[in-house]
Image (spheres, rainbow, N blue to C red):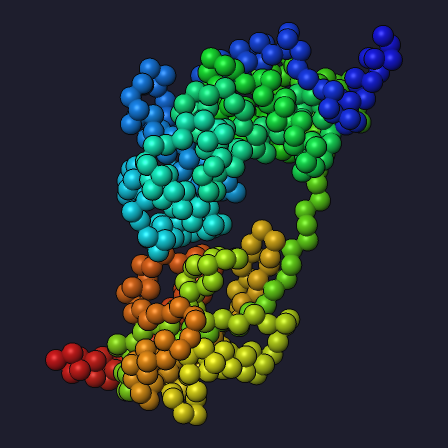
Length: 444
């Protein structure tokens, strides 16, 4: 008997967790305490308003709830709640049902998503909506059937099935991992597949069959607002009496609640460098009708399918001459833009640097403005478009200011606008007056 107790305590403090489970005595206490706390403290969020209502039995309402849960959960991945609220409201106003979304284009979806980052999430939402509608239009109602939809994994399937369709299935995200790891004092690596598997097993034990959706949201809400990574508010936690991590910390000064789960060292960010050329095409003698060249990224990989200014990845830090040489080669090979033959440089100015941070990449962009006059006019580039596999287009300043660009591309555009404004302000008054008069004569 004594050996058994020692073994269980060792498990609870980070050993083999396969034997860890919630007792029949613990489970009802945790369920009751969490649901009572959630009923009093849940945040008022727009997707919860759409997904509430236990007595709603109409199929179309259930499916709209499922769609709302799906959209919100995808948006909330890697993004703060405060940021998601406005995006969610705009999205649901534009595409209130899955059928509306299925008729959208990837360009429209990317424009709506601009600024949220991790654009693959948006693409999967669109592809999943099209898949469901093309398959008959009926929203899958179980976690197992939801996982058949492209882009829906275990977590999202569990969230939709439990919240919208009241299936008794768990959900496990970072918040749930943290809450359960502290309840059972599991200090194992939370990224390890065996640990994740056992956390799912424990979450499955806990989920309340009478209110599965509310219970799952309660655990996530607790992790987001009370059982935080660095500063948990144990004094206000509704399940602190069941928390083994808290119990251990009170009996041993060397142990802290925040020791659970163990902290995983983040992978070191890769450092990339690029030369970005904002290519502006102007008519001879005037910039009033200028247009910008945008290039579409490949459909796979980082920022798949997004529009950006022409850019070239560099082998490392490079001087100005090397960066310009790389850009010149790219523009010539991709668009036939040759400074000696097909175009004339009106202005080429180094604008500055901008560091854009992704999850695993730190990208340093060297930005320049390259204003060109095409000797053959715009039609010269359009004639060459069929000879390249690259997708590109021209947009004017007005269209560019409203286009759904990634935050990195938007920053580059803002740098260009600020440079132009400063340059215009620094011109002598007489020069600015003459420019305004020339533009007025041209419009007349």
